[in-house]
Structure formats: C-alpha cells, structure tokens
Amino acid sequence: MAGFSDVLGHEQTIAHMKHAISMNKVSHAYIISGEKGSGKKLLSGIFAQTLQCEKKETEPCMECLSCKQAVNLNQPDIIRVTHEKPNTISVEDIRRQVNGDIMIRPYSSPYKIYIIDEAEKLSVQAQNALLKTIEEPPVYGVILLLTTNAGMLLQTIKSRCVTLDLKPVSDMQVKRYLMDEVKLPEYRADICTAFAQGNVGKAKRLALSGDFSEMLEHALHLVKYIQEMEVTDMIADLKRIDTYKMEINDYLDILMVWYRDVLMFKATRDADSLIFANELISIREKVKKSSYEGLECVLKALDKAKIRLNANVNFDMALELLLLTMKEN
Image (cartoon, rainbow, N blue to C red; front, side, top):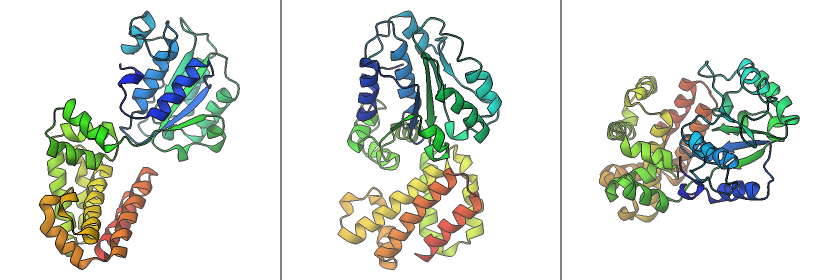
C-alpha cells in the first residue's frame, strides 16, 4: 500500500486527513464520497494505516508491525465490513460486524477502524443500527463510509459524519500518470484521459482494457446511425454492454465526449481541439443537423441518465428517455 505522498491529486482531502492526525482531532465517522475508481478505498486504507502506525506521524512508516499488517490486509484493528447479498448491506451485517464488535477494545492499536465500502447499499434498517454506534461511539472507534452516492444515506447519518468529497484529478496529472506509469503512447493517453474525466482508476482501467476499442466502435456507430434505429432495438443492444466487461456509465461517457466534440466544433470550427479528430466527417455532419440548444439538451440528458442509473431507476426507462432526446436533437 502507498502513502499519502504517492496519491495522485486529492490534495484537499489528504490535507484534511493529515491535519486531523497531527492535531489528534480524528472524527468518529467519515463519509468519503466519489465515483467508482476515484480513490476512496486507497485513501481510506492509507488513512487507517497511518492512524494505526506505531511512529504516529502523518505518513505511514511502512516499517512497523502495524504497517506491515495493514499492507497485507491483516491488521486486526482495521476491519473491512463485508456483505453476502450483492446489492444490500443488511442490518445483520452491521450488527454482527460493527455494533457487536466495536465495544471490544482494540487488539494492539490506538483505534478500531471500520471501513464500509459501497455504503450506498446500506438498508435503512442497517443505517439506523449504525446510527446508534455513530451517536455513542467508544473513544477508539472510527467508521469510514465509502460511497458513490452519499444521497442514499440518511440525513441523520450524514449530519453526524465528516464528509470528504473526492474531486476530479487534473487531466495533466492523469495523462502524465498514464504515460509514465502505465507506459501508454501519448495519443492513447489523450483518449483515456478524456474519457476518465479526472478519475485515475477509470483512466487506468480503460488504458488496460482490451475491450475499450470495441466499445468505442459500438458507441460511434450509435451516434452516426441513431436516426435509422428503433429505440427498443437500441436498448436491447445496450443491455449487451456486459459483453465488453465494462459499465453503462463508461458507454455514456463516450457518448458525452463525442457530443462535446460536436458542440466544440460547431462553436469554434477548430478540429485540433477535438478528442475524436479522426471522426471529423461525422462530426461535421452532426454540426449541420443540430442546434446549440439541441446539443446542450443531449448533454444534459446524458447527465440525467447517469444520475438515474446510479439511483437504480429502471434501466429501460432511463435509456429510453435518453435515446429519444438523442434522436430528436
């Protein structure tokens, strides 16, 4: 596991964590919020490791027994809460792994830290059970809630936690990381950086994915021929995104970048600034047919579709609304 100094971006969140450690003002509960791949697990792991480090500094020493155990994911006082049901963290999970355990003092460390990933999956009953512990925690208890959607958490939970929102990393930092660490050529790094939108984990995943080029081809075919396709057929086709072992959000991001290119070219006629510069012919055609208002409407619809799908709104309904907007504009 890396230290804070090895993390790309997230300077504000790291500064907050380091300040809390140095001033001995660590909260009993944190919400670390960011999209998948943004670094929630990495930062929470480093934070937990540093809190338990025997050197008691603002970076993990990597040498003490606690740090070595944390790196190997067997530090007894850093507990990663698990759940058997894929889409729900149940009240039984919280009672057994948190509430029933936290009153037992730490085995060998100053804190007992519970990392709850995918906290948006906590049932209402599980959140209410967790609330009791957050309201009256033992002095050594720290709970880290990692989530892609803090809106799914009860207000009573949020009001008692310190919330740390992970911001996008700059494109320059992401591109440099892909070229220096992943060893991508510059043109490929540019494409992955554009689609990642400041998400380092996503950029790396796209860079290493053999399916990404197939997904690109699929998305570009959709935007070129959408007027000739039926919405029901398109939805059925999009349900096969799993073929690429990627997520619908990645697909929507490709569409978003393409429509931004169209809008950019309509406004500037500058082909050098396009991500899809090799699709200039189809971009020119779209520019002729679409108004500024129509293109902005599609971009807003793409944003709404991502929000709806992340909130578990019906897949077919969310995509039908999006595709109808794309066909109309």
